[in-house]
Length: 338
Image (cartoon, rainbow, N blue to C red; front, side, top):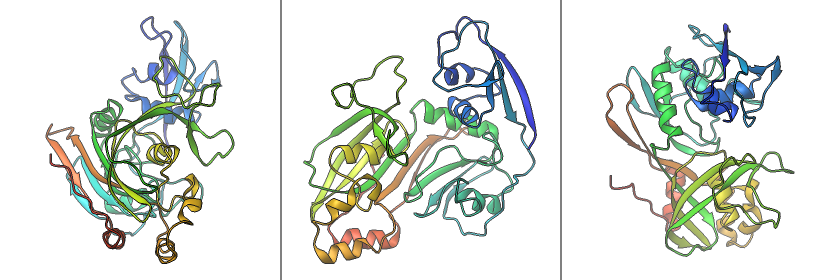
């Protein structure tokens, strides 16, 4: 991996901002999400000390950033795994990710991820985040199925990342959760951060009275602002199907927001589904155990094509086995009329 060092001096107009936001003003860094990734990797330093994304910058400070110069190929292994490609051209790929597939290499998953399969499929992937995440603009949880866009070059990567950052993408999810949600429209908002005790989980930040903070606050640094719109669709067997729209894309956002409303996703043991599933009919419980996933699906993805500037919308239905199970239990989903 070839690294290039950038020295970036903080100007008056950037003084007082968070490190990740200030450094994203540099043309070679491009997006806040990329800066955050570099910070997490320890590639951003001030006075030879690794910084945190939430720190404030001040006039005259000089930050040193190491970035990967676009290598010709990744050091990762290729994986011969058939992909469900919804669209592909010279700039991007839209894939229908199956449940059970991790998006990019991480602990315990070095050579069996979507990235490894993409390297087998295409020799041209963006290296904007370095050679361990080629092409990856956004992520889906391992158990989540559905639509995901991959960049083939850095221009496309930057353009798409900014659309996600500016919340101009169209993202619709389908879900089935435990509990009976009253029909209507819900707007769920909170600051999401790592759970203080259960480190594999995320949670909404609470105030001194243990109430979830639902109002946006300027310069709040204890979590990331998250907004989810939710519409209950059908009910059956103490379960509710939902259509959900993401305004932001935080880690485990839908899982956290629904579980904290009292509606954990069907099959999501991390966020409290197991205890609620015990109240379901016995035969239904047995069927659910056949699915090693929670029921969340990225059904629709829309964005502006970085090169053609065409508005593009992609849709993917539930996997066959899950759709059969849902239909048998009275849950039907329809794509948006766009």
